[in-house]
Image (tube, rainbow, N blue to C red; front, side, top):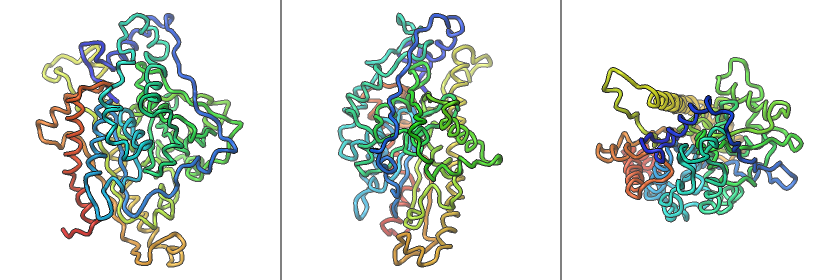
Length: 474
């Protein structure tokens, strides 16, 4: 989530962050402590298997969506993607039925979580419930207001009562992850950032099993607030470990526990964090901030799940690897392009512009690297899955649930990238001008939704996926 810069204090998330950071060195002794309390609970005998989350959730035809950060603009863009898929019909429904996994970060987590809790029945009311009201009305937005600078220096301008509580009461109505799992829709994986270890943190049973905590009883609003917690503007969301409630690690984590010295650096960093989470002498409270700090396109859960596992089909189960035929992975990127007048002059940037440009460069560079890594990993994973399938005996295929008419090499994997850059010039420029904020005008929301819907309908990879699914000859 990259907040928009403006000359007006109330318009500027990033300005608040930078000004507070600059002032920290001068006023460190004047801070008012601000922090959020951990709300997660330990595992117990009542915790269901895998905390109630589905295991074999990928199907013969599966779409995976990764939604980027970008404030309420990203929320609206993600909503446009979902509604466009709903309109694209198939012989047995529509393409929204094929969505089996949604990963999200920052602003798009609002949309992903809402869809996870309420399903397609909630799509019609999502704009009225979440997009149009906005959230800045309940938030502290300026470091210049009395008492706000000391709050920013003490942990964050805003805490749970300013944002998280509004999400819980007005949008999610007390829902927990158990409500998402009970619905049986797509798996929702919300990304935040572990500030201490500098690694992505995903709200899913695997991550919570490391903490010895039960995600099924964790409020959805807390996960969304963590994913959107821009440092200084928001105090970090806190989750804690429960060493006395620990159970054996899930099989998906075996590769991280045994991470070799020559393993990818991302795998090694996550392995170090996992080790610390399980050691009460090294970590008890994990402080979580905006997921865009480590991955603003929400694909790290896919990349690391593949790189950190030894099986040829991971992150799929063996049953899923046998049953799939078509997989489309779509990254919907609503982040903004660079802005600023200083590129037309020899001097600059300086001061605040320099700090903001550096912040954006770091986030954008990491996001591009993550998306490129996903594309490479998908290509390797496709070959590995085909090799696994073709190495199975007929008896093994039947045991794993394969159909009678089964071709081992009949697996198609495609990657699509959607952003406003591919839209017609007028609409593209209109969306580019929309700031990264948590309150937008109805016109800005409508333009973003319209752009996403138009972009989805124009994606050649999606058209090919649908045509192949319904047997259209090209």
